[in-house]
Image 1 (cartoon, rainbow, N blue to C red):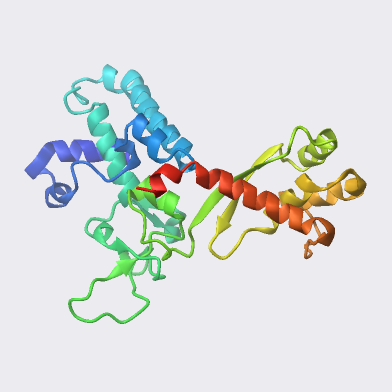
Image 2: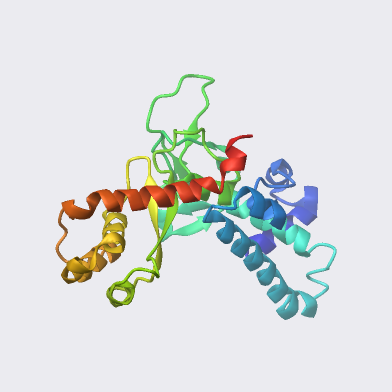
Length: 288
């Protein structure tokens, strides 16, 4: 609804009540929506965000096709093709994805808030926009004192660099985003003598032979280590498979310091090998 409304108001140009705001919006948002498939395949080859970007582009195209078939084509006098087409629809969604503001006090509703959406993101601030019921306005309160002429920042949320790139089209300076994380894919080895037994334990807890876990600057989750332990564990530890699988799924009732000293080195080497495998896919770009 917001996307359709934005297209309609943009078409009104100066006669729109939002003309000053709309005229300030970029004609091509910095969004992965404008990346070609070859660019996504090349520059995001090893990133989990690549598939999400492809899915998002497909979703937007599918939504437009659905609207065109069910509504636009049936009411051409309200939705003329020269105004409501895939080009304008993609532009509108690009604006929404990069500028919508989440209002937690309004039960999680999202809204475009003219001018407030021009505040830049910083990973070092804890300030957000929200709707204030008493004043009936969207309010922004800073978490620090600012000097006259100093740029005021806001947080777009505790998002990874990949999530920021997907929605907003930018990535913070390297090492500045403490919320950054990458998805590390791990898999059981089919050649493992206990493959079927381990897979059965994983499936019991809603997991599969291949899983992805986040790695942050501050470390990795217990679930990732549990999955690594299970993968490298020998047949002699079959009685522990169930416990490892439960910990890997975060379904274990008892949260404890999961340690198996006899296979810890192998588990860490398994994680390192998978990290190096993922990084190797980027090698030609890191050398540029």
